[in-house]
Length: 359
Image (cartoon, rainbow, N blue to C red; front, side, top):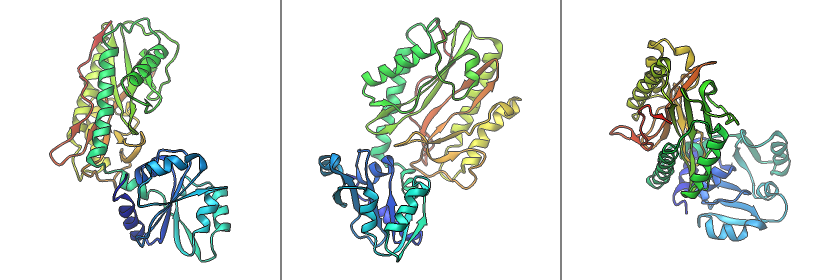
């Protein structure tokens, strides 16, 4: 059950000058109503009236078991949007213009009563989702601990001679054996020069000795994601590799120190970026410092040079993941998942950040 969440959303809807909001998207529906199916729509009203939930006959039993008692549920024969539109009588009704296609928006306009004004209003459920409650944090922490354990398991075996793809498949299988329902995103395993690609895809290429290997992995546990990156050496690394690793680690620690309530995403990013720029590698850190994590792997808030208007709030869960990428040579990224707390960041990723030299 999702408890007070429909009421909290109703308050946001009223603040935006809307009378109701159409909610869609699996993560939003799970957060708001407790529903884990793949077909559903909700309508939440600003006046505090009972919210409505629409799905089809395939999910009738699931709705009965999962959906918050605050919702009035309707099992629809036909299109969900038709049924929802039929319940609109007037007023300003928000819809998520980042999810609803142009054709669906046009259809909704045709189906709704003449007194209904459709208003683009993306991001209201996501605004609530950005601040996690303690139960959510416990689930994210469990997903992060699972990844710590998988890394420990993986690094206890030789890596040289094994392919990136083999390692990715192996660690994803181990995640599932340890309780993950799936990886929270496509695993990144990138050795040597391939590590210079921040979003490298695992290849059927063997890991060579004397190179760095970056592992960026996460687990989906009880609906919540984790995200962690560690870069290790296979065989003795070069002096350049050690230098870059030291720069990125110092930047990552500086970024962690900046994670406090009230700091803007831009300022947190700047704390880590300054370390890399001072070392002469500023142009090789092209992405932001981090992002929110929860029911989805990328959520609000963002930590980047463009996030001046996004202040961190207590209860945000964010990544801190600076990197340096030298095309044709190597890449290093180090990432922790942390909770924003008044007393300082609570790290959920606790696997060592010492540069490991492995077989």
